[in-house]
Image (cartoon, rainbow, N blue to C red; front, side, top):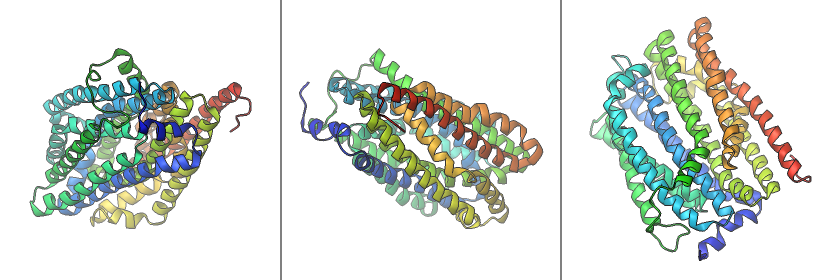
Length: 458
C-alpha cells in the first residue's frame, strides 16, 4: 500500500524517537483531555448538587453501574481496536489499519443501538435493582433515559478518539475531549439554572456535546491524506479483526463490567447501612477519586501506542523504558491526589454540597479511599501495559482480582461489622492487595523479556 506523508512522519517515529519525549508528546494531550473530562464530571455534580439538590446527587450515583456497563461495552471495541491498530502499524500493515477503522464504526453502531434499546426497555427495574429509592428513582431515571437515547453517539465518539491516539494524532484526541468539555460547561448551567430542566439538563448537555464533536471527528477522517480515512470496502465486519479486537478489549470490558457489579454492591450496602445520604457521599467520593484516575488513564493512553508499536516491532528495551516512565509519572500523580484529599477532605466535600450530614459522610469516605492511592497508579499502568502488548490474560487477572475476587468478599463481610466505614475500608484493602499482584505478574513478564534479550533489565 502506498505510504503517505503522515505515515512517514508520525507513526514510524514511535520506534525511533526518544521514549521520554514520545511519552510526553502522546500522554500530555491525553492527560489534558482526561483531566478536562474529569473536571467536567466534577462540575457537573456540583451544578446538580447546588442546582437540583442532594437527592439528585444520590440519584446520579445510582446511575454509575449502568454508566460503567455502557463504558464497558464501549471499551470492548475502542480499547481493543486501538491496541490492535498500534500493533498493526508497528508491523507496517497499513491496509489492515484502514479496515480496523471501518470495523470500529460498524461495531459501535450495532452494539450501541442494541445496548440502548435493551436498557431503555428495562430502565426502571434496572435502577431499582441498583439501589434506587422512591426519592432518588425519578432523578436517576430522567438522567439515564436521555443518556441512553444518545448512547450510540457516545460509543462512536469514544471509539474514534481512541483510534486518533493510535495513529499518531494525540492532539486531535485531546481537542475532541476539550471541545466536549467546553460545550458541556456552557450548556450545563444554561439548561439547569436557565431553562430549569433539572438533572435532565445535565444529560442533554452531555449528549449534545458528544454529538457535536463526533461530527468533527467524522469530518477529519474524511481527509484522503490522513493515515487512515473513510473509504469503500472497510465497513464489512471481518471475523479476525472482530475476534482480535474483542480479545484485546476483553480486559477493560471485564474491568468496567466488574465496576458495574461492584457499584451495585456498594450502593446496596450503603443504602442498607447509611441510606440515601451515604449513596450521595459515594457519588462525591467517586467523582474526586476519578479525577486522579483519569489523569493516570491519560498516561496509559499515551503509553499504549508507544508500547504497542515497539512490541510489534520487537524493540523490547523501548517497551520496558516506556513502562518504567509511565509507572513513575502515575505514582507521582496519585501521591499528589492522596496528599491533597487527606489534608483537605472537608474543603473537597463542601464543593459539592452544603448539606452537613452529606459532607461528614463524604469526608470519611474520602479519607479511606485515598489512604493507599499513591500505590494505585502502578497497578493501573501495569494492567494497561498488558493490554497494550496484546496480553489480555494478565490484564484480565489484574482487573478481576481487584474488583471481583478481592473486593466483593470484603464488601459482603466488612460492612456487617463497621457499617458504612466497612464499605470504604473494603475498597482500600482491595487496592493494596491488587498492587501486590500487579507487581508479581509484572516481575514474571520482565523476566520473559530478559530471556528474549539478555541486556534488557528492569
